[in-house]
Image (cartoon, rainbow, N blue to C red):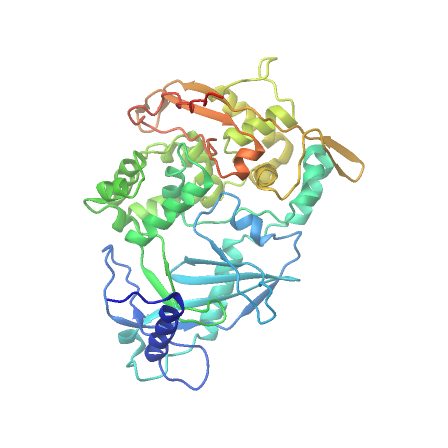
Length: 481
């Protein structure tokens, strides 16, 4: 068969989309698409469904309360897709962020006074009481109000972030210097299942690769929503929701994930999903951790495969409402030592032992108080963005904010350090977790810009080591001149 050119393929795809659109006199558009199923089967059914889109709705939120770009892409959530539309003027639009949450596709776009959003729902024809030849039912006012409430909860817009920034800036000069460059960094209130699985993937990993894994596992086991070409895309696009515990507890999941490049994490994900699935009301148990104390929720999470202290803290902070939790990874530890001259027993620590992990967390908790996890996340985002290029930093350059001058030093060497973790016994379960080895590294700005990812951005502690996991990385051989 003769290969089609890119233009021909695009025209054919658009023509096919027009044929499948349901005839209607007014928006929202409807599309015959794959049915969204809550069942565990990874292969979706082919029953037709309407795609119902809501009108664009707006949230008026100052940037001091929400910076959408930083909040969605700073390493706490890994499935938000960023895209741009080419305008008739030839310029590109503001970034559009898209992700399936709560069985709906969400599209968010920043505006001058906040952001706007719309949703796409998949409604099976049988439940709609319609046939493909009839007009799709419109999104109801009640559904629109439910969307608004969900988004308000997901972004935790009830938390007075501007007030907290002012409080933290008055108490901490380092935060005061960075806050104007990174306003509106919020902690998302995520689904605990997605949060748990994604941070199991974070073990010895970086943000880019975790995002790739989240995309792969969603395509393999999640339910799709295909939206027509409209004002968010020139061509139809398919998005995938995050898989359920039932889907991940199936036989063969571990082998499939290994073929997708998950490595030893595949075993942890499969075993954790099976453990929760085997519980009586396992999903309700996971959700109930929101109502427990931090200490009890943390201990409960440590009984799951692939969940160590740092991963448990990430889940507590990002999906279980423990706002003062401080996950300590390489970045946070380096911030404490570099910017706060953190010392443990009179010395600058070179590795992260359990005692130092706890001490670093207490250090930031004493500064930021009840929302310590939020405050530390601003510093974390600033550290990442300095590498990514938002703040242009040159060796020895001064970054000045108001009356405060902060000397920024850029390390240019690569350095590896190995940390041994002693056994941690969880009293509630009686389980003992083996000793772990942890690597950390520092890399140059030039290497990061070149796309070389050697650093461990998560430093999560796992229950078991993959064979060879604790070995030192092999350094590339130097060429002879």
